Amino acid sequence: MIMLFVVFILVKALPGDPITVMYGEFDPPPEVRKALEERLGLDRPLLVQYMLYVMRILQGDWGKSVGTGEEVLRLVLRRFQATLELAVASVAIATFIGLSLALISAWRPNSLADKIIRIASVASYSIPVFWWGLMLILIFAVYLQLLPPGERGGLKHLILPAVTLGVVSFGMIARVSRASMLEVMTHDYVVAARARGLNEVKVLLSYVMRNAIVPIVTIIGLRFGVLMSGAVITETVFKYPGIGSMIYDSILARDYPVVFGGILFVGIVVMTVNLLVDILYYFVDPRVKLEKTRV
Image 1 (cartoon, rainbow, N blue to C red):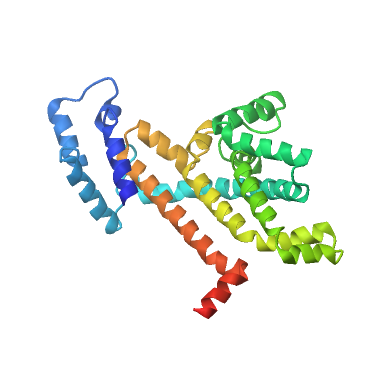
Image 2 (spheres, rainbow, N blue to C red):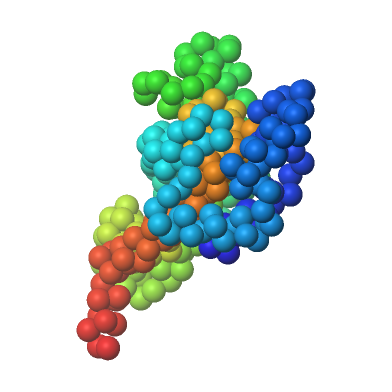
């Protein structure tokens, strides 16, 4: 609720209001404006508006869109499907690239390949996401004409926005995974496995990866939450009809119920993902089970 309160204050501080946006260049007559303000609750103090909104949320009433009159919860759930598809696809791409590069770096630390991978990892999340999106559109949609530049449709429409978010996220996964693997590789059981003459690939996959999995699962879960909450720019660049673009359009239209409903829903999803990641620790790390048994 603290997050929602901060967003509530910031959105209300923006210049303009829904009535001004609805009427465009022409101001409505004073009596019409007053009636609309009373109907929308805009005539009440800011704190009162927030408290009334929270009470409606607790009762399951997410309100209705000022522009379309559609129920906010239904609108959010419809857009959530598109955002979920994008987030899952981008996390899969980022995880595959990040873990692959981390294995190469951990296999040959401080080699030329390791240095190139570390530079690429930093560059991936240092360059703005909109730049990646525009470059991919320019190359694959304009020049090569292999993929559509945006909107939602089949698999082809999903590739460019998913790759854009995946490229931005793989660097963090690669760096955390590399650090975790290198730390595990100093343990005695890894040294003993190598002394027995086991293949290096088997050592990395069977010994190193399995014991370095907790930080990797953590960063993947966090990146999924970041992608769910931070896809506004990507969805706007590609005109992808997800929650991010919905929130952006609603901010421009001062459609407060949709803005608050979208942000609240994303916050709930992010908290749920973090909870599932904590539960997943129990299954991927035997040490968690052992600690629980001792307690």
